[in-house]
Length: 213
Length: 252
Image 1 (cartoon, chains in turn yellow, purple):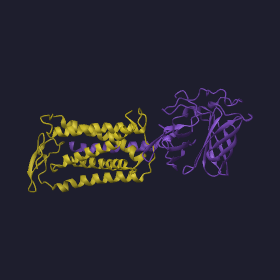
Image 2 (image 1 turned 90 degrees about the vertical axis):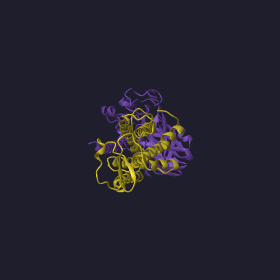
Image 3 (image 1 turned 180 degrees about the horizontal axis):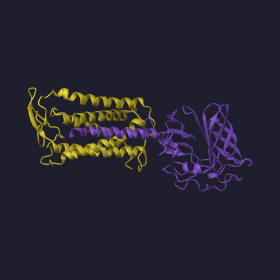
Image 4 (image 1 turned 180 degrees about the vertical axis):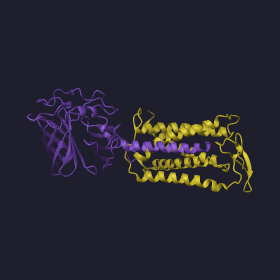
């Protein structure tokens, strides 16, 4: 299993695999990987535990906290729901940029692999994450973990999963000896979760109530 | 250093969430109602709850501390000017007076009057809500509701009292006004009611709210209204509320 990347892949013969290991995209020097490679299971253990803890804690809080129906609002929109659907839509737009910039980084967009793809990836991710935070706070504080119907249940579960997956990816990123599939899989999960959250909220809202500010 | 940036991202998100949670906690009632309406004006106004002595049964007191008139509420329909511009996009409608108080049975009652037309809302915050319509003229309250519910009573500027008869049971009440002309009784908007969901809220003088939502014919405690938008969410459905019995103000 080999995964091509734009630049700077280094290989090591680990557990009998001929596996090309992705370097930390944040790493300044490709050769920084530590000499004794720990098994990837151990490497991913802490990120996975951290992500699971975040996801479970988010869900438990959403379930136990009595929804207030009210949370801090952002001026300029007609209501708290519209604030959220537009912030969420903004996050979804940045998530698409995430996917495209990741594909570019990994050389999957043909020849289009600009040097700034990594920077674009990092910043679009930060912005998407920060846009999602107020939405999540409103959801958790004002509405809680909903299971009224399939949509709210899927939305709530995916929302918790998104923040867990995102945490896992952030904690995993600096790890030096990740298996090659780790970041694409984690990134793909984060992207899929966010788009799922968006489909079950903003898109549902737009199709139900119409598109307005 | 670069290895830290994902952690910084997480930390930034956590910090932002913490700030928003804190602000949300402050935005929620009961702390929230103090902002929109008459903060400055109320401070400048003497406590209107104390009617000037010696005025025999004045009609509904005009807002803004203008001298109480002996006239009936119907004329001089224009509220006196000091109705303050609301800071938020809350409806700028005003009412002449709202009395809020307790029934002897424990439920909360609010009677709001505009131009002699009175609307009363009784709810216990859990499972009881009653709407009544009627008049407030010459110091007399006379309102009726569904199923033969009747409210009769008397009022002065800062105080109203009387009795409510529900299903043959008689309850007395005393209600007071804090002089505010901001609407204090809200009801689910007509389009919400058309969809089969009713609800009422009383914004009490201390900033807290009490309300009941009737959801598929079943009354349930109402989550408080968002004081910025006068909406709330029940079972994932947004409910808009509108002020009851209010004359449209400048902003409407």
